[in-house]
Length: 208
Ligand SMILES: [Fe+2]
Image (tube, rainbow, N blue to C red; front, top):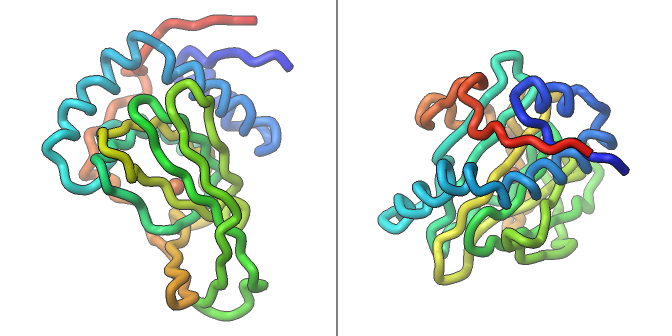
């Protein structure tokens, strides 16, 4: 398969316009390259890793949102001992570790989704990801129920690419201790430093 590193927002928009099954491997290749890119690491990973030393919770340190809504690229910071809720997204997603190591847990849904605010989950697998390991991908909704965290002693940084949102809500949060699921209305837009799509983080590109 030929993959092309998308050099700019237009390239990424084209990638995100593809059907999910075609977009996901390209998104994974894009992120696997991005986390090896020197200028991206120097500009957007090492500085946030520094900031992470004093932080308690995980947070999104940088994000680039396409004004047309076709993608969102986000840099997550994981201080030691932090993790998300178990959740899914209303879009496909891909992510790669850019510094340190993150732990991803994936869940399967055992019920048929017919009962309001009820979900029975079972852990399907978990994997540790470091920068040389490439990227992980999730399908929208039930195809991508997951948790990301950093149970290790060093801070970690990961880069996430989300495709176009397919539903009104951002996704769902799960609490398997009481078989509970609820909608997550929206992400914390506005609290996060926004970079316009034209201030794209790097201009290095490669074609094959
Ligand atoms: Fe997620």
